[in-house]
Length: 45
Image 1 (cartoon, rainbow, N blue to C red):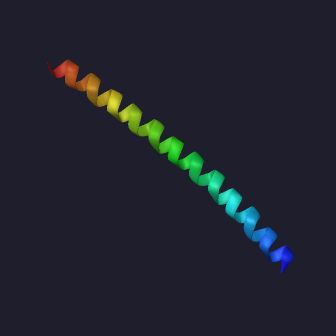
Image 2: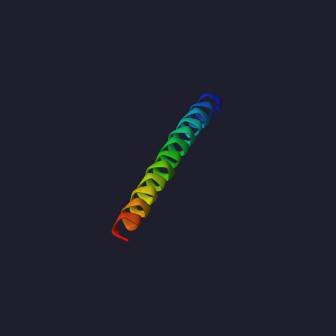
Image 3: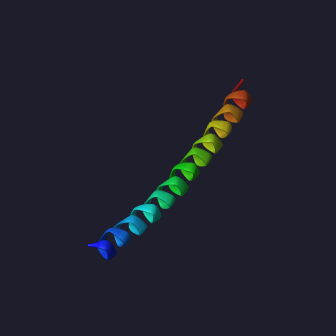
């Protein structure tokens, strides 16, 4: 029982770290896209 829960915990922590990395990357990319659209909007004016 203990080894199983331990493995599950490690797996959960790893998934958690991965998802945090992914979300921060998505945030970063979307902010880049926002900047690009703003620049494009300014250029169009």
